[in-house]
Image (cartoon, rainbow, N blue to C red):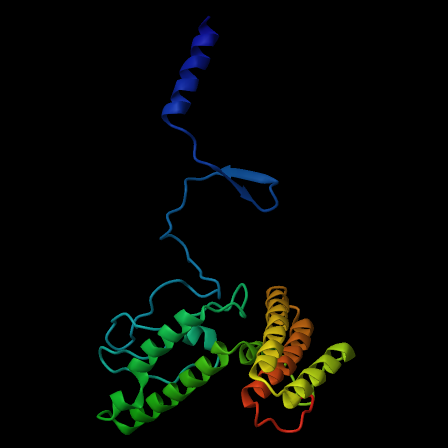
Length: 255
């Protein structure tokens, strides 16, 4: 009877004061029971691996409005670090998939950054600051141009990962190459806008499929596959370009 009462009291104590959850350490060979850690303790990290905290101005200690080294409060400005990716400049995540970008958010961030660094806002500042602002604005323009377009985004990722394509890159899929050449020829010979629209619709379906290939390759860090898909996308976008030029289309060719 005594042992039963002891077990009952122990059970009540555990219900009143439950033990913290068990945390597995290493490969699970050892476990320890630790109190839940506050989100503010330790480094919280975002998808591109950088600390998820607001940077402060080294001059006036105010929070910096963007990831760039420029302060709208005291006009502190420094050149953009060479190691900073286009994604980081425009508040986009490079990890886990650098190809997945919210273009609408990217555009909003681009406008917000340009509102701070546009050269017109620095005309009354010293020449050195004006020069830095002009260079920063130009680089932000380039970042937005690269990331807002799927093909240029893929090419930028490949270059950053050491797998940059060449102008002479071509598709190895002869069937696809023949389809591309045939589509361009059909556009050149079309006599009705509906014909061109139909070719464009069929081509767009192939583009969407290719974008899916690029997204999967980027997620898997399969850079050779991404490079091949990017070349394919370039050829398919050539069909849309030919459709845009109709009926003033030049003689058809594969690009």
